[in-house]
Image 1: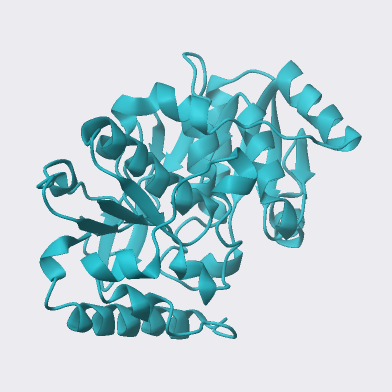
Image 2: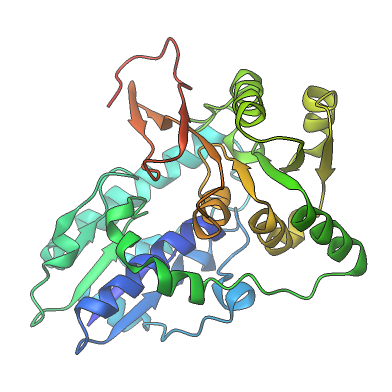
Amino acid sequence: MIVVRISHGLGNQMYQYALLLSLKKIYKDIDIKIDTNHYEKDKSHTGYILDKVFGIKECVASEEECRKVYSGCRYYKGFGREGLSFQPLRMLYRRVYSKIGNLASSGNRSHMIHGYKFNIFNPEVFNLDPKRDWYLSGHWQNLQYFDWNKEELKKVFDFSLDLDEGKKELVAEMLSCNSVSVHVRKGDYTGSGFDLCGDEYYHEAIQKIKERVEDCRFYFFSDDAEYVKAHFGNVENSVIVSNGADEVEADLLMMEKCRHHIIPNSTFSFWPAYLNESENSVTVCPQYSLSDNGKMYRADYPKNWIRIENARGKQGLR
């Protein structure tokens, strides 16, 4: 049996499920299940949402099954995060419960495989001993985990949603013009190691799109509409799309309908740009995805995407 831990927001869940689909192609005779215990205490995101957005139905591993391969999994659900809105406290929490879990699982840690730091490929997941049980915990944000299975991902991550009339009209407009989705992520990124795409990045990205796409229209998506109004309200031929925190699936679908994309270092907007990629589409992305302990980690995006240096003055590039 292989258990894949599902955690964090929708974009991360899609990466983790993309890995799971690849595993199913390779380990055809092995039961593969998901672990959603993360959401029993972690209330910082939308909760497990793959079933709601895409109708995905997977077998969920019981706590007993998870503990069989990784006893430390109980510590993932043993500490509450309610009220931990201050970013340093959230980071401390993650490190503490991860270390406790690893110590607790010292007797069976060989069954546990962590994903490398966000976007670094770990080939071990495709070379597992089929006679053993495994628990896989990570973000798996590297194209080598799933790019070769992209056609199936397009079928599974089907952006079908019953929109209200106002959103349908906006989607029709997006499909009829040289639409560009612009995702501005603030919220939990502000002040964190992910806070790497400032106003300068977006203005440069908009200019690069204009150089390549005629008569483009920009559709801004953000968890902070007021920030977008204040900082990008003067962008010509632009619309601010505000669906609200409870309609993340609407944002995802509408971004996917745009022909071109400007994304930050966010898993959420990566997927619409990646799955809707066509021969003539233009996607602008940042060069780096994370600043952590003095190191900058490069984002792993398709080679044909246009990269912008978003770590000027930063040290420790990787």
